[in-house]
Length: 453
Ligand code: ADP
Image (cartoon, rainbow, N blue to C red; front, side, top):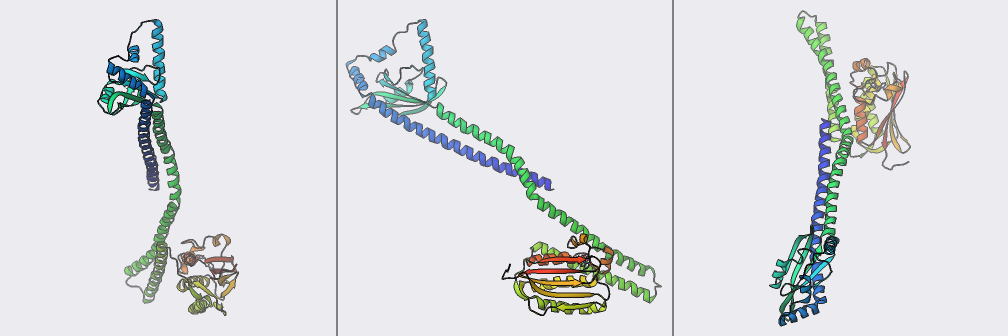
């Protein structure tokens, strides 16, 4: 189950990472493309304006020639003869190479054209096939401004063609262009970075997500395992008294001729087991409630000595029954911020144990004091004691140092774990010191409000 959740979390994590990279990548790609286009258009516009300025005279001359009917000299030269020499071929090849380089470099190209469509001026002495574009020139001569992207020599070129005016009259047109190569290479870089980032994201996010999910799942897994064993233990504990009750009941059922005294014995046993089950169930309820709410008590000022007096009083008759002397050393008030009910409950658990695990004729002492800025309740007994190994485990749920003995005293091994949680909920703690065979001391520590050190 946890494996499936981990996997789902890892995939989710990867998807989020991929989505973020994709969104950022695509957004920056389109933003950049947009910026480049606007900038290129602006650049072309200003280049075109400078070319018009630079060629004012050339255009004026062409206009004058046009008026007088003399064809343009440059146009004549350009569109003139074609000597088919080897040398010419070489030059053509060289020219083509230069043209491609020029377009690829992203430098500006510019043509001035007269009213007849003849080239009267160029920015560079390099001929480029299909340039200037004649249909755009024609449209410009009609007064249109044409913006377009054309493919020339396998390079994408942005072109701007516009009419040139003198005295409010069109006297020619100008076409400026710019290879988009460098910008497109930049865009391509962004594109490939995004794709690379996506691949890397997938490669890293899946294992990273898996690792993270497993890590954050560990406490849940442990809590789940604890809960599961808790339920198993609880069921087991409940089955024992049930088995005994059933056995006694069956015995009475199958033996109608049972003597009154025997019947009474069986009934007593059943009542004892039912009591033990009731105890167990109420302990389970306490624990379940504390687990559910992660109880955190609001501290009120409480006198621990008072609580100990009342506790000792309640257990006096039980101790007397077992011939155990229960003594109290709580003369000075010890006031601390804690929960009175919870503290009473903890004290009852400790006194119950102390009396249960102390042989006849023994002694149990309840003492309050202040120690190193902490308020202290100590419950010590002269009982059977707890081995060092058991001392570490008696606070675990369902743990009993000596199950047989413990069961006969009615405990299911939950008392001390409830006490631990009640103390933790009051920001206090519980400690044990014990000498196996000669007695134990349980110590409750409460932080005082003043917080001495
Ligand atoms: P139980 O219901 O069995 O008393 P607890 O959680 O209160 O469960 O105690 C756990 C175990 O710790 C007991 O079974 C017992 O073995 C041991 N223990 C607790 N208090 C004492 C004590 N005062 N003297 C000796 N052993 C004790």
